[in-house]
Image 1 (cartoon, rainbow, N blue to C red):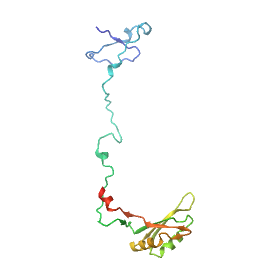
Image 2: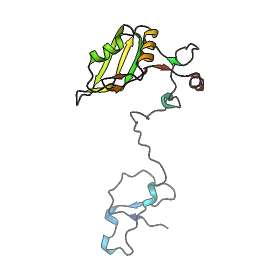
Image 3: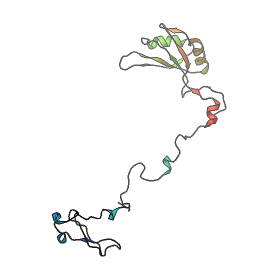
Image 4: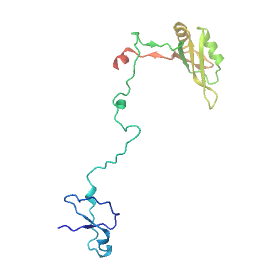
Length: 185
């Protein structure tokens, strides 16, 4: 014979038609003795809602809300263009053959670099990037030639040469990966 539990501190809940089997029934607050008169404290069944996960019916929005195959192990897998079986070496850009000259003096002008590299062929484009804060050259230049032979001649002749008291290092700006790297993926 279980007596009804008194829950005076909790707000009343809507009652169902019949109590669940094996559960104690809650007594209405007006039938409970005053709080100070209870011996041994207040009897409350805190376990009645434990164990069952709540179903809120709330839909999760944003990334991760639905199970789709977008992030299922496809990271790093990209479409590839068919490649020719050439050895590793320089790669042509969209418009021409680009070389990079590093070690350019910070006070060099575009004309200085242009004059040094123009003797090897027709320069289609020259980029000499400047530091925004100081206004000086960042230390490298991109030079674009029409043909591969002109660019190769410029690399061979200017690599290790001195321009405005600084030694230049000249090489291809874009290169194809070697065969081992291609086959690995």
